[in-house]
Image (cartoon, rainbow, N blue to C red; front, side, top):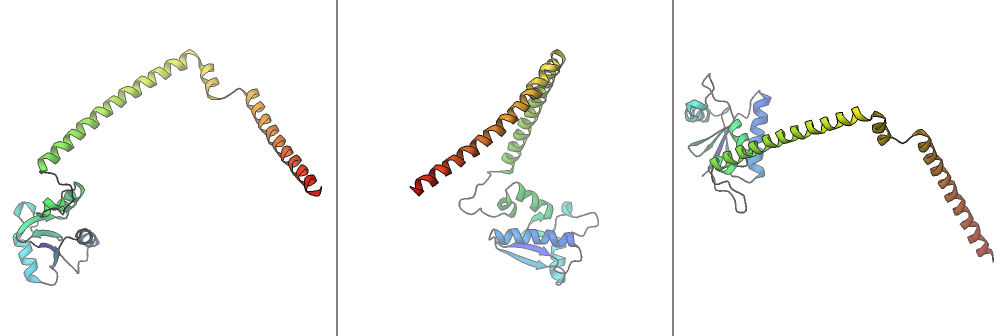
Amino acid sequence: MVIKVFVATSSGSTAIKKKQQEVVGFLEANKIDFQQMDIAGDEDNRKWMRENVPGEKKPQNGIPLPPQIFNEERYCGDFESFFSAKEENIIYSFLGLAPPPGTKVCPSSDATEEKSEATEDKSDSKDENSDATNETEAHTEAKADEGAPEEAQSDQTPPEGQQEGEEEHAATGEEEEKQGEGEEKEEMEEQEES
């Protein structure tokens, strides 16, 4: 089975170029064998791609834009489908390939959907719980503020006199430490001289 990526090598659209580069780069990085099929330089490739993209996947104007991805004759999808499969970590099933050994595989896309729904339900309930907790905390804080505004301030910062005393103590401690170091140096010098 060969993955075919239909690209336009001489596209004037930077958006299309970036999408093509992302698909090709991902396939190369993951050592997935593929062929680039240029629709800009080969009319047969362009015609084949346009005929084989399913009707529901074609844009309103009827002309699908690159990149378009196929596994032999089977249509895999466009860039958006590829990106979704990559984000959901189901790229091998998207491409119709067996995953390499040691790769985690979701048994089916239904299981993936069920997991994501369960995760959403859990996150919704967590949000509700955290909202209730926040409301309770805010209510408790409001009551505390009403009861003793002076006490709330005293819990946050020490009184000015105490703060100044701490600064003086720290400065005195530094001076004592420097003085102690100086005395030690003098004693060592006296011992060396003797």
